[in-house]
Length: 265
Image (cartoon, rainbow, N blue to C red; front, side, top):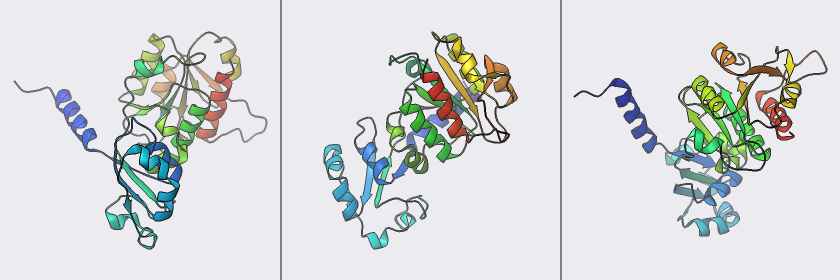
């Protein structure tokens, strides 16, 4: 019996994911990954100077490092490593498997301090923005940052470096369909607030009536903002009030403001 197309595609995606690896770079990102027992570590390339700075984490992780002459380390592509030579790698490159966090239900209802708080990203593709959002989500106690499997920033070295270690601690989930995930969160008891600069209600006004409810903040990409389907699916649209006519924030800054507001309930 021939397998349905969707089953074949799912199996192919699973095999592809099993083969994928990520190259992390920079002392902070590499140090936190080495210290993370949940992270599968494959290969570590370091200069002598970087190895001395990471000595404790290398020893604890059990990985055997490959020491590289710093004069040959300026372009990682010479070692068949797909890292941009302009990246600030600080003499440390670590190949790892992507982290597996579990399902939306398992992660978003994790028992933490206070009410569950989640961030959803609607086609935010810049890894630096996503990395900064992960860092803010970690600081303000969010359960997870959720993005789509396609048209979103993947787990990369650039994202990890911007996240400054948060990628090892803050769940970054990738889902097939954002609107379906919003509905799933609503069924779990979350109120989903879509941030839109043209909304009538401010985020503070909306949160004032949600003192006992889990909240999901839904952020759109800079420029296009939230897609129409996303706007139709969230519980309400809210805005961050602004004092002057410019009235626009970078998506990572908007996420930080929204997370802070929600965390203060």
